[in-house]
Image 1 (cartoon, helix red, strand yellow):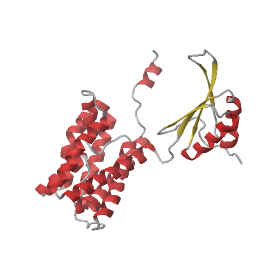
Image 2: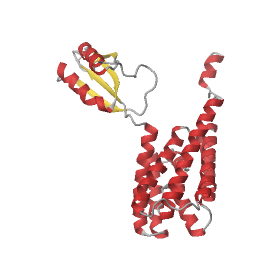
Image 3: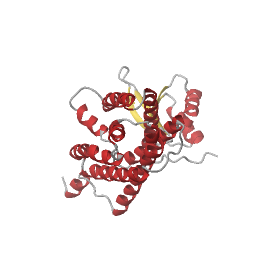
Image 4: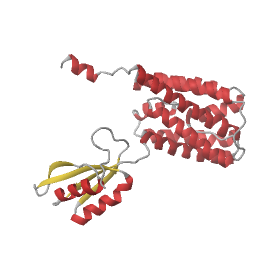
Length: 294
């Protein structure tokens, strides 16, 4: 292996511009998280899951500033993150948690935006989720629960999501004892809303889809997709396992709104064609940009 090949395999150092851009994005995410917590959720006694939820309840019980608990309780998980996911992730996470801790302390005396618990739950959950999702998208984390779940999942036969849900079942349930049971139910609602907002930010808004088509009329279908959808296609050569016949497989990327039109195109040429459509989270490079079809 040449030195150039080794350099490509090894971790590539970020440029100053990339580091600055990542720091700005993480800082904005931390600002949104602090806003969702101190201006919406915490004043209305609504908690989030994970270390954040534990910190909110401990702050309420002890009277100690929320930012202190957020920083101290997350530190051990940052160390775990360094061992499991690398230096860049750990530094990004420390920076994000530090900014959140400072901003929650600054926002503590700011009055709640609304006293309506439902409104606070919905909008607090959205803002919180967008902030956390932004930090995750740029290579960091603002809560150590996911890091712990990654470590535990390697020891037991459960997924990271199932482990996080197990932790949060007890954390959100504890909110009923610390506050009231109606606040615990609002907390579950805030957690669900925040989780959906995180997925939207991390996975993107366009919801692209991949399509695989096998048909005797693959050339005609491919030309129609190019002409009527403005999307490029790739032809792959396959072989039927049972018949041994050569198959020409069409692969293309479309948006969610184009799925119905793609199905129509395929049915126009071959109602018996094999069509498989799957969700994908991100598309980069290639020629995914839509061509003008007018």
